[in-house]
View: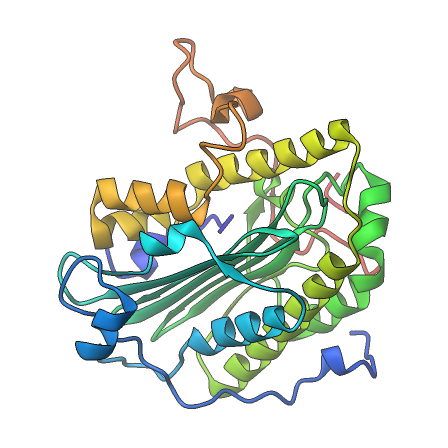
Length: 343
């Protein structure tokens, strides 16, 4: 998630345009809570899970498993999913204290480099990190859903993250986002802007991004599920229509753009603090770089400082305390036509 809040403190770790299109329907309803069963070992197989079921006590009644189930079922209607080699290593884990569990899935397809999901459940919180990355032969945006739920609040990012610059690259914005502006406006009315985002982070978002915070309620969850469905169905339509690129230079541009995205997220994602608390630093780093942002060590040789040189110290090391360049956006920085208002 490209957010600016302190995710660790929230986890309790201390420190409208209308449309007749069916894709805009808001009548979906969540089924009863599905709890994730976790075994007693650090890493357990699906078979272990079924034989050693253990439900964590939840103080709120929402499950993000329904979101993942929908995405997988819908994807299978469009393409043939194959389990990723990552699935053997990254499937389920227990937190160090035994009071939380992590559940992971990963797949590949003809046009999809990686579809992966992570659900975290503890006694007081639940997190969904779901993303789909196209293969480099396609310049389709990256599907991104990052949801955090506690007894008090929900923090949501849902977007089709642009692969290329939509602030200055008008042709790419028109290709993928111009027709989607009504969808973004529809949900912008339901989910108000969630607060400050930095000018660095905003470059990775689209004009239809849902970035919001809200108090827990069944109605909000229903609407969030509808938004997830709408956005994912749109993404599947885009990847279906995408034509395979044959120009080597364009394929390289797509590959580097995805690597830049992964490099930023692997370094700046605030969720890494949560993972370190749950799993310890070594396991958390492996999960972050090998699973969540798989490709950061394989798709390119550039490092974070190569893409974002202002973070580089005089000795060449990464200055984690470097000042953020530019202003922060307290309000949605796009107008009703999807034009950027940040400058």
